[in-house]
Image (cartoon, rainbow over all chains, first blue to last red; front, side, top):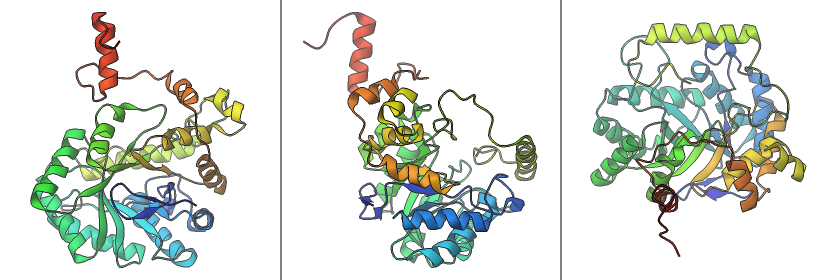
Length: 262
Length: 91
């Protein structure tokens, strides 16, 4: 495996990142189609053996189960000092106030929960899953900077937002001397190339690299040529996913852009 | 995409990933592997270097949702201006 530097950082990553949304106890919530621990471990082990050292999960994937499975598997199969663990926050993992978003309180709480589930002392790349429009950027960015200074987080990353919002964040970080976002996680593939208009040129200009999700458009780009497209999963799985989605929307009553989407 | 994949005798997933690896702004695709084969595909894609011609064929069918209000790429802007006005800026 030829490792590359992530953006302008000195961090060595494999040019393949394993997305861990599919690892998690399916009974613990979205997504309904996740692999249980035993099946997940086989995939993670295969990735580590192939030289992949870059894994991306999130607090919300199977409500924390993904982080737990990844943490245990990497402890067994990999060397923590070589591994790059990326996780995310902003989506809620429980009901009630201060569960959602990027307030100073929420960030400080979520980072400790993620560290506990991953069973590690630090997160290599801590990403904000979505922008929280109801918390001032300054509050979010200064707190993220503090996490880096506290040693809980090595690098900061961002995900899925408008280019102008990301541009504003990068400049606030620069002018305040705060740790900067070094990566952007966004959708990009042959079927969805809208990021070419604003986000990718911004990232190129700022020296930020992207870690793209849905590189195969949810498998559409991987299916055998000529075969009819069928919606993902069985009818029962889709029904379960729909139920989960409705429940999430009921519980969180989010007016921001944090939930209701993947 | 199927044609490019068939010409090289690789899976279409490998071609889609190889196309992403051409872009210098892209560090790594996030591969949601649920089977070990998905990982093998992603690793195999690393050794595929697409030609400019292949990339152009892959990109051709895409219809952009953009209007012309904001264009970040000067080459794209130049082409759009030339097409709209009929004037030639380049020699």
